[in-house]
Amino acid sequence: ISYCGARFLLDEITDYKPWPDSERYVHALSIKEIEFCEPFDVSILSDAGGKYWAVKYMQGAKPIREEKAIHVLDETFRKNQIDELYRFPEEHSEPEIDFTDEIIEDEKEAQKLVKEVPEARIDIMGTFQTIHFVNETDKISGLEILVNNNFYSLFPHFPENRTLLIPENRIFKTKGVKKDGHIIQGIRTIPDGLLFVFNKNQKKPIQINLIEYECYGEKKTRGTDKSNYLNTTIIPQLMRFASAFSIITDENTRRSTIENWVDKIIDYINSNDELSGKIIGWIKELNPKIKERSIEREIEKLLIDAFKTNLRVLLVIDELSTEQKSTIQNVISSFKLENGDNIEFVGYVVRLVQSISINDHSAQYALTVQ
Image (cartoon, rainbow, N blue to C red; front, side, top):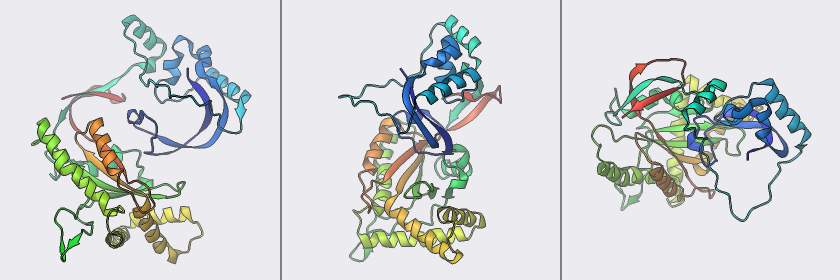
């Protein structure tokens, strides 16, 4: 049984997806202007949608456009409207939720469904073949250059007007740890880029992402090679990112790294009018009455605070299993920031595919073969 207990307006695209099956959804949006009601069974939509109402209205993220269905939902909601979120009585054990869509194996039934609900059909744009990136750093067909050049197309949940990407992999170095006056090898680390995410509705409005690009590419094709590289190179590198800003690192070293990076970030932003205008706009959204001479000081303050309280390690790689992603997440989240929060982790798999044939430019789906 599915219930409706709230309605709201969709707001901005976000990468915050706290539900269990979040990886199934390409887009997520924040919400605003929420209204509540006593939960009612949404099967009332069967009056408007017929036998296949669930597929028609509930399967996938899509608007309900039929006036009859809209009227039924609105009328039922208004009759049951309440002021606060209804909370179901607590159960001793959480019921296991099945997120699998209804499976239709009967061909005649499938034909009936598609006839009644044409949008249920999966139309194929074309067919593609998965190929390897050369490696991470190749300037023509390397993962890093191709992702940077297509960043906002790949990651629509990072809208360009709400994020700031610095795709430079040699500007920022962590301070490193000294012993007897010398930097200990393997402690200092350099991310491939930084991504700043702005959300004025959060207590910590700027989140800093340390970007690491990794690629098995054409040379690491065997499972054992990939596993060894993940465990001996990638994970230790991500741990160095996290440790550099975690409380396990000496406070003076952390402070020195943060101050040095913030100076370089501000210099980089000031050298680009578009980026400068963007971050100044963010500051004015947070404080419309701020004086011009105070803006740079406020930017510096927000960046320093973000490094101390709202930091995430972001991995982009050409292959990563769910189990591997979970392992890395557990490792990175064990590092704590100054405010006691865990450093976060997110991993994205990006693959290079080559078209075999393009059949329908208006379709939303494609098939790939590897």
